[in-house]
Amino acid sequence: MTAKTDRPNPRHVSLAQMILDIALERGIEPGERLAEQALASMCNVSRTPIRKALKLLADNDLVTADADGGFVLTADPSSTPRLDDAVKIANDQQINSAILRDLTAGRISATQTVASLQRRYGVSRQAIQNGLTKLAEQNLAERASGQQWLLNQFAVSREAIAKSYEFRLATEPLALTLPDFHRDLTALASLRQMMQALRVMNEATFDRNMFERTDFEFHMMVAKGCGNPFMVEALTNHHRMRRETHGGSKVGTFRLMQSNIDHIQILEQIETGRMELAADLMRVHIQMSQSHRPKLAGRGVPPTFKIA
Image 1: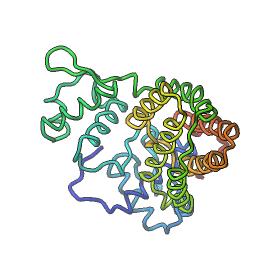
Image 2: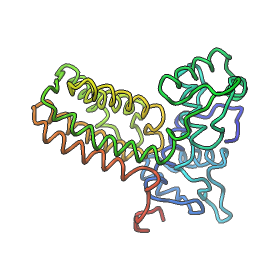
Image 3: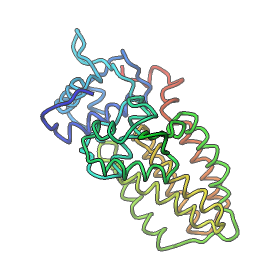
C-alpha cells in the first residue's frame, strides 16, 4: 500500500473501507466498475464524499480511474488489509496483529528475526520481543535456531479457518446444554446493552471495534459458563487465538450486523433458560458465519444484485 505523508480524513477512510466491504459482500471482482450513485445510496451519503473515498482508494492502488469516468476495482477486497487498521503501532497487541496480518497476506515469511521485524514496524527491540513472547504463549510463534522465530503459518491459513468452524460446531452448542452451565445474569445484561447499541447502527455508523469486543465477550461467556473445566480451557484458548488470527477484519459490515442480531437472539434464550434452543441458534449462527467468509463472498450472486 502506498505510503502517504498527509493523514487522510477519518470519515473518508471509513467510507473507503465501506466501499470495499460492499464490493466484498456483493461479489464485485477486480476489473468491475464502481458506480458512484449506487455507492452513495448504499452508504447514505452524497456523491461528493464517495468521490473523495474513491480517490483515497485510488491513492492506495485499490481502485483505478476509468478512461470513461468513474473508477474500477483493481484489488481483491478479501485479501486487502483494512484501511481503518492503518494506525501507528503503539503496543504489543497492535504489533501482534500487524505481524499476523502481514503473515496472512504473504507480505512476510514465516521465519523472522527480532531485528527484521523491528526494522519493518519501526518499534523498539523490546516491543518486538514482548510481542513474539505473547504470540508464543498463544502457540502462534516459537523460537527457532539462532536468532530466528518461526511464525505459525497454519494458524492464519484458510484451512485453519475451516478447522476452527468444525471445532466450534462440535463444542459451542454442546457447551450451552451441559448440566452445570452457569448463567451470569449481570454479565448477560451488560452484553445485551452493548449489543442493542450496535443494533440501532446502520452500515455507515456500525462500530466494528465495539462488535469485535462484544463478539469475543459473548463467546467467552459461553465458554466460561459451561461448567466443564476441560471445555472451558479448550474454548477460551481457541477464542483467544481466533481473536488474534481470524477476527472480523475481512468480513463485510452487513454480515457483522447480522451476527450481532444472532448474538442477541441466543442471549435471549440463555436468559430464559431455554438452553436447547440457544444451542440450536448457536449452531445456525456458526454455520452462517462460515458460509459468509470472504472466500465465498459473491459466489452465485445473481448479476442483478451487483452494482451496475
